[in-house]
Image 1 (cartoon, rainbow, N blue to C red):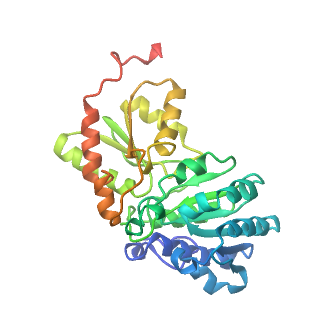
Image 2 (cartoon, rainbow, N blue to C red):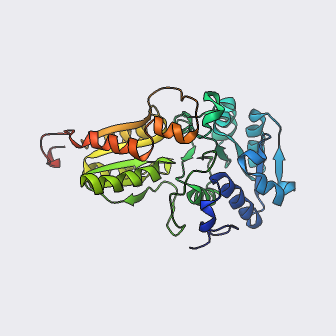
Length: 337
């Protein structure tokens, strides 16, 4: 398996490293090539794994203390001075505690600050509801100038971090807390911000997903093919904004059944982004969103929460099966659309 460009780890290591660790090591490697990259955190260097960059470049790393609003204000100032700041904190702090600074100091000025938000979704399960973040995709995609990315695993996190360095706008990258199983066996695939990746072809239905749901959706599609004879397409919509409209419309046209799956509230996230594209296209299809149903997540280990909310393969299988008999219109003729 090929070494991911410019990093000191390879795809074999992805099975034993968290996405956070891969991010930290990727950033440290990028720092060797680009002296404009700086790191900023609010007393969470080890927790967010930006410590790898801090150890390599102590003169380009800034710990502002437990002051998330200052974190993003300082990151904005560094960007104004010509730097490329990577600001690392937990997703819930980036979206809510420092929401005003992200919006006004960074996005309003369209500054190239890269926000790496860890412990997103329900991945920090046992820490409790206050530390879950199931609203961040909705918050960030509503902020002008903001690019929003939700990688499927550590390998894709590395690719997203590398891809965002030269992006002139602010970028929000959402990753989990701990050991989420790798989705990709190799880094030998093309990654581009704003371009979805088809993980599996299919003609009966399409699952559009992001983050930890991608691996589960692929596993669900395999089981549905073996047990039900269903051909299910799986699309990894790693970029929530700008979203790949072409991939969505193509799936709606060719499979006529769309299920979105996300570790997020069903309001405002991936599902609503996909639904808006379908509605604007005028292409009729059966469409359902799957995630947290407008509720705060309960407390428990992340793996148990994924199963509880049906975000694992079994939960996705149930929801695809429920869509198979859904009618979308009486005829298959698109000429009248």
